[in-house]
Amino acid sequence: MNKYKFPVGRIVLTEGIHELLAEHEDDISILDPFLTRHQIGSWGDLEEEDKAENDLAVENGSRILSAYHLYGQKIWIITEWDRSVTTVLLPSEY
Image (cartoon, rainbow, N blue to C red; front, top):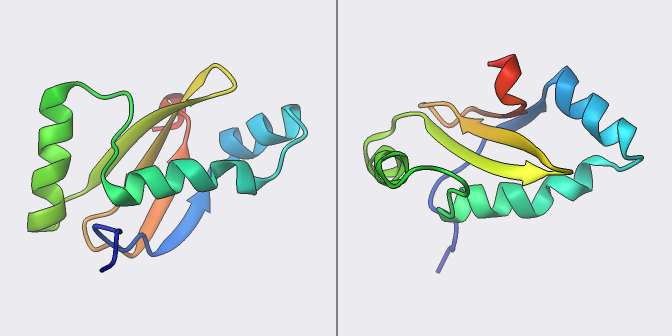
């Protein structure tokens, strides 16, 4: 059985995420656990109402947003409604 609740499509990182990784001399593999959590439905640092919206979005094909912390900064992971692309970004870049 597949543990993933939905496909993420192409993964895109914003400039802010690239800068954050460079600042900490890390590579994109540090994001793997967050992407996995996103894809299995562990939505991170969201209000319960937003988590429930994500659960519905998995079923009805709406946009999905997760929030996590990396190096003390909040990051968002957003999968578009058509599951063609998932973007990792800083909230200030939205």
